[in-house]
Image (cartoon, rainbow, N blue to C red; front, side):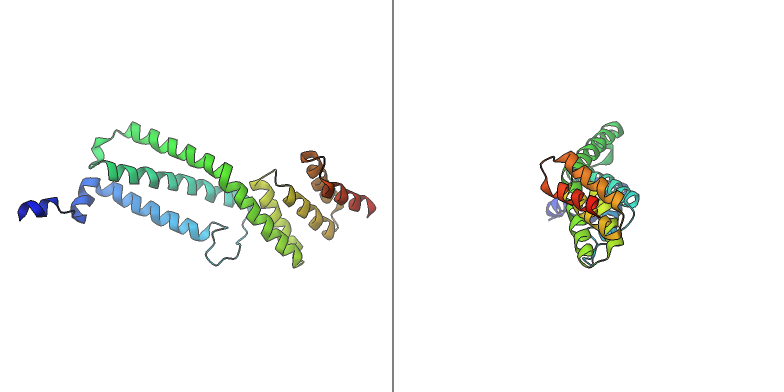
Amino acid sequence: MLANNKNKLCLKQWYRTAGSLRVSLLVMAILAKALLYVFNPPNYVSGAVLIRPFPILLALDIVWVVVGSIILVECIRIIAYSSTSSWSIKRHFSLVLIFIIAHAIFHILIISPAKSKYYYKYGWSLSEEKDYKQAIHSLDIAVKYNPKNIVAYLERGYVHRKLGDLASALNDYNKVIEMDSKNPDGYEGKGYVYYY
């Protein structure tokens, strides 16, 4: 009877052997990640885009990468090792660093272009509603997340034209032509600017 109780997984015992401080930190990191999910567009819970200045979005992304990496490392460590003393601090730090670098590369290559598309679509919908100032703000973020997003430059050029800022519109159309010299929309937009 006692042998069965010893083999039984007890939450309190697991908490102690996994390292109470480590488990507490993991729980805090998961809560921080959940909080970031609520406030980090385009994951904003209401479904509406919460447009913030790009440096704030970038800071949120950096925190997201670091916290996410720590969660992954701590999960591996808690599951694979019974006590905190079984793994040296140096090895632990190296693993966290590797996860942060891998997570950051994934964020830059996959997440940032996806966010760029999201902000482009939102900027396009705002320009359809004739809310040009907010559209510019959203399209600026789209271009910062992915400087090769041609459709965002085209849309931003169109919105600049609507606001009467022909110099900025021309810059956007020139950028499109510089990235893709065979893009007819870039030349068409440039023609409109020269016409007006």
